Length: 500
Ligand code: NAD
Image (cartoon, rainbow, N blue to C red; front, side, top):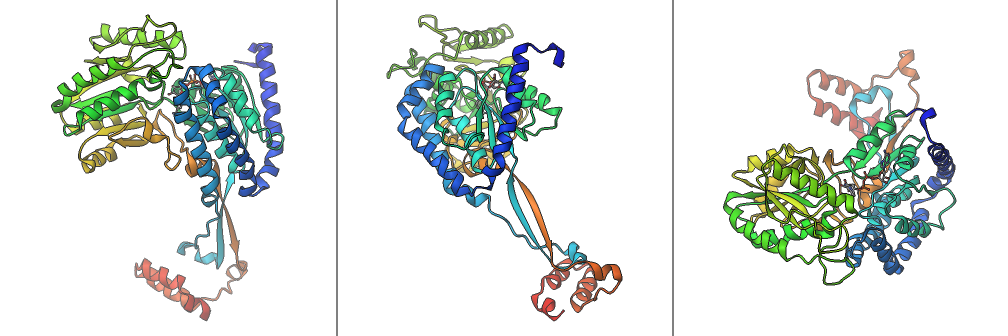
């Protein structure tokens, strides 16, 4: 799109975003010069406000995206509080200066000291998604702020109430440290084309590609958390009942609108029949209904479009040879965008339902004979976020997990165990390229800078008056004899250095 093709609204958005970036850049120097402790003191207030307003925040999340209140508290607000606490408590440690010793190949420069400091990028453009509006947004915003960046934040247009609440929580920050830009794709586009120093994008892989292309004109680095889907593996010695319960929970939790929802089930031939019977039973027992009723286990999807997409992909797979074990249609007895918990069998890699990131309580199930098939199916998939492995042998499960090219392996559990501030979270391939949570996120928001301090100038070398000391004679003789370790030892020897 050229400048001439832009609508007045788009032009206005670009101006607004550019002003926000200028404001954030002006604020960044002073903000980055504050100590970690000073920056954390602002976020302490934010932490307090979140815990104090759990009720109103969870209500806003429910109003925006119909997430059940208990899921909003347990899956969104609590992990946010843990995460922020961990960042404030341990973040300073990972930003500490490092002081490595110089390498042997540098000896001709003479003695020097090295220091590696971690510096913030500058202004971070954060583009957010709707499904975990508190957790995902606070995670990136707080990691960016604590490490000395300022932020221009474009949250999802689908969570207006929650966004407002989040933004108000930061109102004690100095002006320009966090600037919110409201709007949809055009606002996101304006942020990704602006003069920010880094973009952190959470959302679908399709949009992530657009963001990367838009940022490409300025070569702005883009960190991504994108499409997911968990492959849940039921091995031959799994506790099949637990695996079936976990699978049913994971597929229907928050109506499947989770980037690490089990979407592909790979079941060993020896476990298949029993697992299939139990899974069908558990999926059909899930209580569907309005998400605000305490007895309800699965609420609606975000909108009718999401239901239509799920139904289209299920029907398309069936037309191509897949069979339905359970579900396979919208749940029309309820008012709103509901879809039945669904399991498909006889699917193939070519079907779109196997390829993409489907946000609905739908999963496919296939039988496998040996682990090589599992490795091929997981590592050959374009998305690689997580894998859940069910096995009574932790050792075997761990060994298999190490062969899978995904960001997190969950043994004998699914979905829930990744929302932990102590562990890094990130995908592989088209699922993303960043590390987030706790101290991992903080370090990820900085870059290393080296300061090399020479002790004495190189003048003697240029003038040819360099003193070829005993130490260097030993170093050279050892190197000529191919004895690197001996040379290095002599180079590092304090005694020989003192004699020089
Ligand atoms: P989305 O890709 O539709 O939108 C994400 C954000 O990008 C929104 O703020 C949107 O306004 C903005 N946007 C849309 N078009 C844009 C453009 N051209 N340029 C810049 N910004 C643009 O995703 P969504 O519907 O909000 O969230 C669902 C998706 O997010 C799922 O695919 C899910 O897997 C993914 N997700 C991933 C994670 C993770 O941790 N990997 C977490 C949450 C969501």
